[in-house]
Image 1 (tube, rainbow, N blue to C red):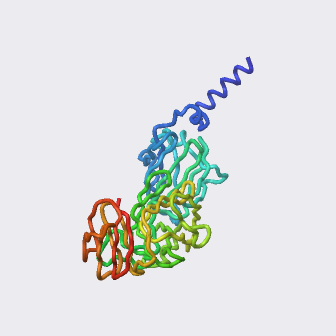
Image 2 (tube, helix red, strand yellow; image 1 turned 90 degrees about the vertical axis):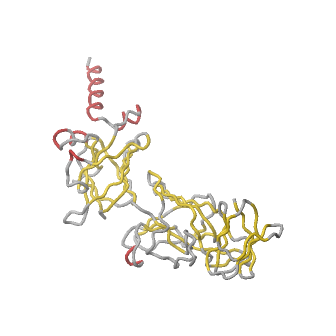
Image 3 (spheres, rainbow, N blue to C red; image 1 turned 30 degrees about the horizontal axis):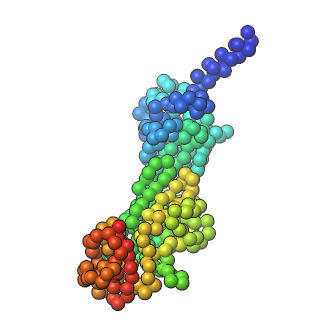
Length: 340
């Protein structure tokens, strides 16, 4: 009888606590997770909703305001209600001994069901809040991530170039894909350094834009473990969070797709096109994109030919053409490109 009572006691304890262990075994996760704190003036009845994006994982974009001490704070619950009408009873707390767990962007903070400790944010602002009830942690990811470096203009403007390491532009803002991952297509890396028969540029990531590096370095940046680490096609590379200046990756000049995973702290690239001939103009990049040839940079005379030698276009820096291999003459320098 004692063993039977002990068995039922365990069942009742697990149900009343809605333990994450039971959820992990049954996949019966709550419909949503709710956030109350400096994001909504501590109104638990109107807590903001984190929606389930995949089994056991919840996220949403939340803006945390600063308290007098300069920090933001919040509490989590699986019930949207007044504090004493259900929010407190269904709390997801931090695994900390004090009143709140202080943590920073991308840090995975352990969570415990039924614990009333909250969370304190080092730098208030807008974050993608991700609560993982499978692995029992909460993480804040930056609202935005931007690519900076030796980059050309992604909109193919007449000027063709962006100042090297321009901290002011948001034209290379990455798209948020969920659970700490970001993605961007058509990053145009300018040729800055020649090594043997290839040209390379350099890039890293920032979470803010600003007038200069003094401004953006006040916020997290993401870069390579070691300066000028090669970023090659489809090979995931480690990412390091930097409190200030971030080490750059070395990338072959041309058109690149980038995927940044701040959950796993990895970056990968897909090199769509590079400069195939070493005779190309050092002030311009010739890119073969889907249905177009683009000449980015300073170029006075541009001629595009088929591989058989037929003239396709002259004097145009943006040329619509069918898929295939083309020869492009830029101010007397010849390069080959592939159009998809």
